[in-house]
Amino acid sequence: MAESMSALVERANEVIIGNYGRLPVVMERGEGAWVWDSAGTRYLDLFAGFGGAILGHCHPALVAAVQKQSGRLWHVGNTFHTLPQIELAERLNQHAFKGQAFFCHSGAEANEAAVKLARLRGMADGGKRWKTVSLHKSFHGRTLAMIAATGNPKVRDGFGPVVPGFVNVDPLDFSAIKAAADDETACIIMEPIQGEGGVNLFPGDHVQQIRHLCDEKGISLIFDEVWTGCGRTGKWFGHQYFTDSAGQVIEPDIMTLGKAIGGGLPVGVMYAKPQIAKLMVPGKHGCTLGGNPICASAAATVLDVIQQENLTDNATTLGEKAMTRLREEKRISQKVAQVRGHGLFLGIELRQPPRQIVERAMEKGVIINLTAQKVIRLAPPINISSDELDKGLELVIQTIAEVEPA
Ligand SMILES: Cc1ncc(COP(=O)(O)O)c(C=O)c1O
Image 1 (cartoon, helix red, strand yellow):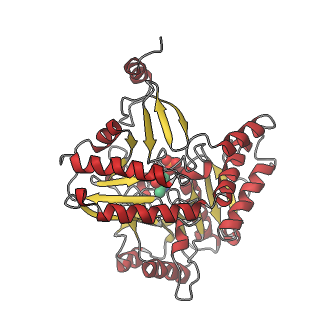
Image 2 (cartoon, helix red, strand yellow; image 1 turned 180 degrees about the vertical axis):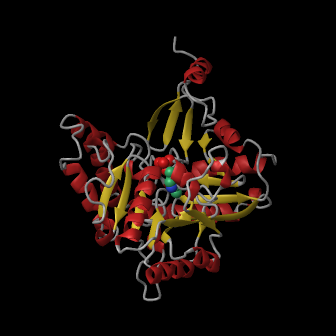
Image 3 (spheres, protein in one colour; image 1 turned 120 degrees about the vertical axis):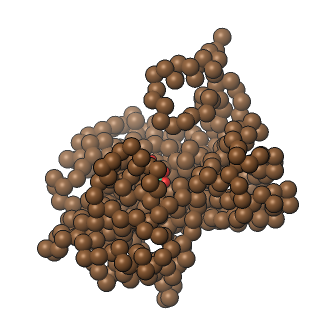
């Protein structure tokens, strides 16, 4: 007889560090937008593993890419080139600005690499620019430097002294950003949409001001696209929503990727304009398994599937439909303060923090997330069907309607 879920959870609690506050559920398999636990219960996954499973679970093209590459070459040192890395970087050039890539395993590592590169640039011309300006409510990862960059003091609790050189300011107050960006500032880092902070969008003219400030002062602008990259928002990359008065996309100097780019495998990318990227000469940075052929070929396939299946459009169409439905739904109108987002990156801000809403949604068979105390986050696979999303939204609406305040 199969081992019960509670027995498995007990085994897990004995041997796995408890840093995640996990639900007592053991997930066993997945297909498309669905996952099954080890007791056979099926859930509609409207959060895709914090956005990583952007094409859902076990997409046949990803399974085939991993199978093919795993029979060919797993790993060689980054003292050699491999075709999957070249193809992945070429795809990024196709869908973003012209740039060069460094590969690692996670969003935090990609951001670390970005800040290191910005510091190299800040010192390259004999300057002394080494500091990073970041924004309140931001999230950039869990390494020692990235908890300093993250604009949420809770993540630093217990880990002091904090790495110096990071200044957090009000995200929407341009004069505060300008005042913080002094002659020692190497970079400004921001998410095109703040994810953990509550799916917070930025006005385009604000971003344009930040871009101008960076240009004036030789500061590198880093867009942390770990959440917003790879079609999630309905554009290839979230920053492509920002345009200047001539309609040109406002580009960063450096973009970082994680989560979705690997389709669920560990891939992080630091992607920079060539004139800055060239400062990363041998010996300055590295990652032993970064860009390993299996992960890189999966990542290139993720981008190919997004293109072939026109999934940016799917995210836009379904996201708009979902937002309209959630805004018009009478059963929850008293409880919802605002519905916002782009594409299939949606935030439903409640008026009150809800009690155990994630657990209540699971009981109904749908996986959601709660962030910033009262913002329900939905980030389903971007190839989810309209029917599946409708079904999931109905369960989300029922959950919101029933849930008590915390
Ligand atoms: C915007 C952003 N940047 C960076 C990270 C860190 O990514 P990882 O957990 O892969 O290190 C996250 C994780 O949630 C994120 O949301």
